[in-house]
Image (tube, one colour):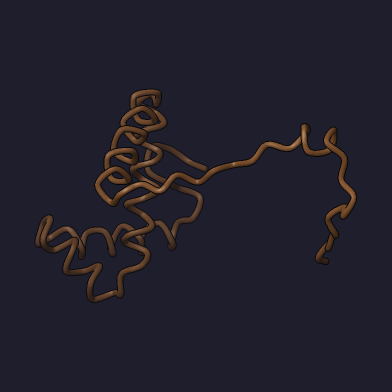
Length: 106
């Protein structure tokens, strides 16, 4: 549902006083890059280790989820050439015994 409003053609000064005009600054590409870099540093500085780890895991997971199976295998093989088969075996084991997970039971 879209709401449509018409401006008051006879607006009073008091109606204008309540409005804040937002100016979008024109900045150069370099200024934009610098603002982003500084703001990201402020955000990261305010994060605790648990939040940083969760964020990193989410972003890394998103990246690998976007890979094809072939690309995923290449990435894992580049990390450790025997790891992919081990992870597939782990997955098979987990799926055969759904009551057990690493570190204990569900």
